[in-house]
Length: 575
Image 1 (spheres, one colour):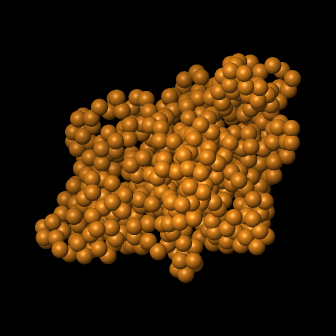
Image 2: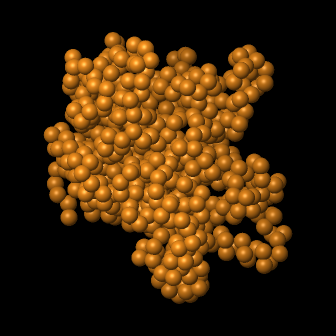
Image 3: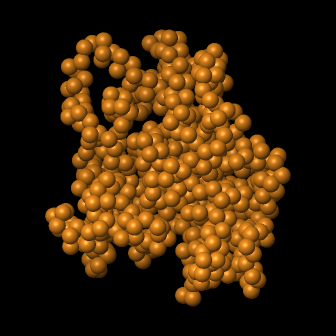
């Protein structure tokens, strides 16, 4: 299942939460991913890409996880046939009391969905404790083996989760009581509790370990299914980790909490006045790289090791951060305070510090060389820690010229998004001229799908935006329809032409959002915003309906034809 540049691959990108099945509980799960793997195999796709599957924080962004190791429990398939400890009567009692039919309709409603799944997991855990724990059974031995294998991170994680429960579910440890704010203080507090209270909390910690055991089991089974079908699973590793996470709480010395990582102002994400003026403040703490070096990058090796157990390759979100990261000397909750200030006024409030690249700006040859050296060092370490698991670098944004050179030297493909690949006159670069060592994708989860962008461009053109009208002409040319007037509707002819151009690119990896395959307008994320719609959109059809309903079935056949046309079909059959 190694994905190498000596072949050409085609795949689709779908967030797990967006996958829909007939009997899910209001969100995509491992059963849905397995069904989608079978759909990929039936359409001769070799890669299924998804977003991070780590445990969500209270904003439900997959890029703001509370742990670099723990898997999000809402991704689990919780039925008696998939979870041996969940009895049919328990399942029926919990599901009957929920508005499951309502949850299955429309977008994800995270809070009721997660409450429902937590209740099912608690019921299963009660059965496990009664029948297996502290008994000499196969399941008890398997669970104990998991606890031993994951001892490097699991105790801190379960303590953190219990402390979250003690603090109304909030992971924001900086606002917890003083006795909870550090692992040392928390363990001291623990010892002051009455014995019965400690026993109850110990049981709660065991529950969180149990959930992770089930999660790691189910995702291992997803990987096995992928390998049986010959479809590689592609995961996603965010550059940063949430400030409000167990990793920052437990390993404070590895993070520089004085600075928050983000991105500089960029034309593609206009609309937010703060982003236009200062850039995107993601709130992730910067890394204390010298501290990571001193421990041999052990935290990173654990992080990558957990990814490599599930995925055959993974995308590094914002790989540019390993070279230098655009940083803010204030946390996002203070953004409004700085919106109306000049740089000089802002500096008065921050002790002279202003947003900029760290460790160094690319302003001198010495700084550029230092940034390049750091990025290459970290990527070489990640490659070694990943073993046979492949790496793809999302290198979008302000890309210094030393980054593509470094990636090429290491054999790591970067991204080619057609709208960002332009000729001097603004036209799209012919995708047949993209470097082979690259991944082509018409849009990521952060961009409007092709159909939505077409509509937006026509709206802007109708409002008198000459640039939008010119962009429609460029898209027609990219779609192999030069000189033809762009139709107002996103027609099948335009749709097919755009997809064909992507699959015929020279890039050895071609992965398209499934929403783009299906011609949908649903968008997954508006970067730098707090829209309630972020991370909630789901496919309008179940995976089963993708093959039976006329509209998605026709698009599936088109996709399969383009995969074969472009020489990206599997070279051999798989059992």
